[in-house]
Image (cartoon, rainbow, N blue to C red; front, side, top):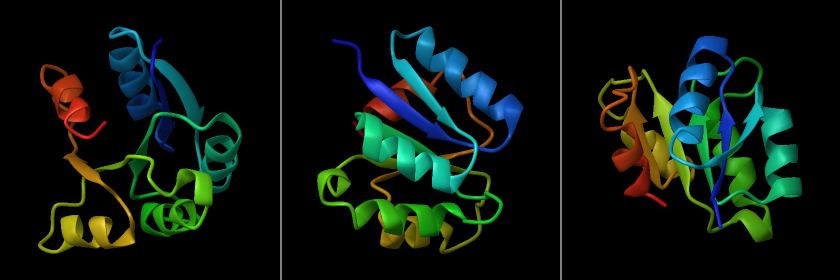
Length: 120
C-alpha cells in the first residue's frame, strides 16, 4: 500500500516540487496551503506523515505541530519540518513543538526521498 503524505505549504512552487518528488516515488500526496486546512485534513485523512513548512501565514508551523500533537490519533504521526530557517536553535524549536524530523530548504531533489524515509 502506498503511503499518504500530507504537505502543509503555502508556496505554490514548493508545493509543486514536493508533490512531484513524492508522486514520482509512488507516495499519495494530500495538500493544504495553510495550517487550519492542514490540521483538518490530518484529522480526516490520517496520513502516514506530514511535511510541514514552518513559515506559514496566520499560524506558523510550530503552532501547527503543537496542535497536531494534541490530537490523540495523531500524537505519534511523523511530522517533518521543512524550512529555510537555519538559525541556531530553529531545529531545536521545531523538535520542541512536536516535529520528529527536519529538512532544510532549498530541497535537494537527489536526496529528498532518502531524507524523508529516515523519518517515516
